Image (cartoon, rainbow, N blue to C red):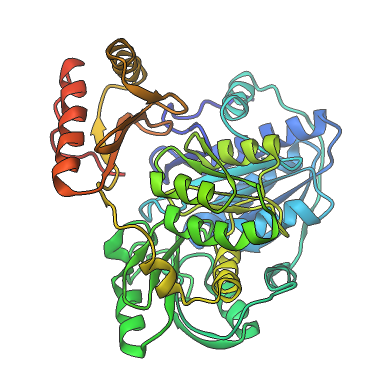
Length: 460
């Protein structure tokens, strides 16, 4: 028995497809069987499984578990919940790996799979290996059993363990995503006053799309914070591993700005600690970490890559522009948005300022959102190489951590190839509009030299 996946499914950090088109229960079975075979050959015996609130998730879970069991490996089904709840199970239960079925922040007809193997991220070549094993039918044979456990209360208890924050008035928007029940239980345990939006888990996402990095999706939270005069608000993506936030005045606190707040609190206790952020993060963040006596480290975009780097350098805190925040300080080092919300309350308490004051104190920057350009898959990395070669020849100040990040007197600009889509991603940040226009002109010039025009932006 062999299985071939649709060529678009096996991504850098996860496996993802459109249900009924590129993704079916047969794919889920093959994924479970291949992953469990790797676990078994490594001496493992049990895999934790969880799923998000999408309509297709229970069906995919049944097929995934059947594949795991057919490889002779037991499955521990933790049921419906956010991705970090599955990571929690993989960190605390007697298991050798974990798989979360989730479409994350993609449209409702998408679904996919995120993995952890024996406490380490599972990505890149690991995911390609799943495809190779399925295509060859290189599968273990056996008869595993499945056990279901209810872990949500233990997980929520862990989120508030050792809580040292004050009482605030907070708005929470779960976006009908998988974190809804967790947010209800979590806020019941926190001091202060909590106003909740859209905690019913509903795979139709009837109120707004669950992606807090898109400002339009924060409109309901902004309205709630304004009407109730709340201290701040937090929002979550579809599977609860990314956080969005606004202050009491309705200003967005982007991922790299949140990291400034977390870093300020953490560095009081851990002077000199290495704080990691991805290449899309503001220069203001790296400068602030240095100012606070920390060691800033710029790293490649991608939650799996960041987690691996944290382990390598012993970093207690990392984050991405996209709202993934990773705490290894008093926690497990994975991206957990409900936990990040708890730590925001703690940070404001420790720093003795409101979230609004902390946001207001940040240097105003003019920047672009992510600009995305559709390019041919085979060309995307080559274009970045061409740009790097030209910049190096011109003597520009370039960081090559992940694509080209160019520092100029005006600010900085970035061009990198997406690991998950056939797009180039650009971003720029400056002190004023005129400087930003010059940075965008520099990006346009480099793209033009490689035969690309900045036309209509490609979607997510």
